[in-house]
Image 1: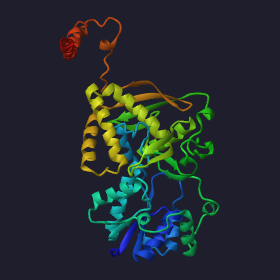
Image 2 (image 1 turned 90 degrees about the horizontal axis):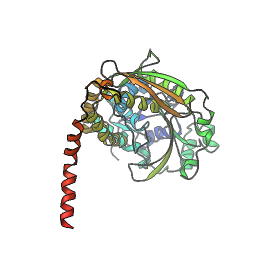
Image 3 (image 1 turned 45 degrees about the vertical axis):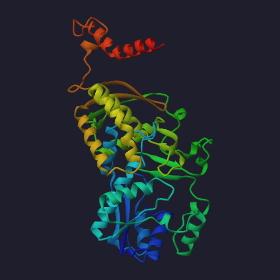
Image 4 (image 1 turned 90 degrees about the vertical axis):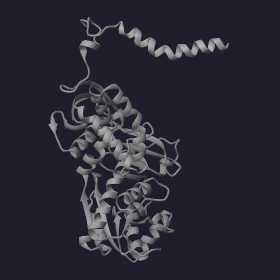
Length: 409
């Protein structure tokens, strides 16, 4: 075990990271700096400061940072410019938060002179990869401490025993059997894993969901939304301009009310196993639908198809922790270039779990030409005879192949 002078811990203040804090002090005999990120998870974060102080952390070494605006502006919005979905369904709410947390941890390590960083991700999950690829990409020689890969506290009972032995406060829910699900929340989503969900044949309990009502319980009247975009990013809702994090929070509230954004998914984890999770992403679901709608009238056909071809690769890079990689940056440059003309508005109808596009337009950048697309007399704007040559040229290789086949037989 190499010597560590000072370590920056990604610290939530919960049972696991509180145990890690004490374990770092005892095992590595090092000074600990705590970092708690506000990504819009909707929880009170100040108790984390009190817990850190209880463990002897210096006040100047306790960081509780509001990263909501940076999160949406510099991570969520760039991801949505690509219409990013992993394995056909997942909107990557957990994945996209990890590179920002890693970035801020490294910044704090530099500020405080720390020579190590630490996280609470287990050796079974994807987050260990996402955090550590971020650390090494931004600070190649940083020491990384992953307690779940080092200690023998590999069960909830051992964690509780360690906590009791060292005077670590244990919330009543842990004493009585623990929170029913492992949850992760930020402004983009909330996820649920574990316990009841470890049986993929079992339906998720209705009481589990936090942000959304069931579609059956959603209002009987539809609600209309007008979303405006500039360079591929949402800028206003119903004519009201807001900061990025406020826009996403507003969409979450509206979408949740209409039962939008629930997902029950068995995903393929990076470490090789299949894992079931349930997700609520109401704002992201609305945003994705609206963004594709405005692109439908502003993007060239082949550019749109190229984006669709590249999107699964881009999604995989985010899922597997390569946000800071040169290939993700290169793809982002291409994606952002395509968004220069993605300007305009989209009208949506929200109704009982559904997001329905009812209209869209761009005054300055629309490629939709009604004089050409019309079913009525187009006054010569399009010569239908041109289609014959186009079809024959595209059929030529297939005609040649079929004639050759007939000669062989």
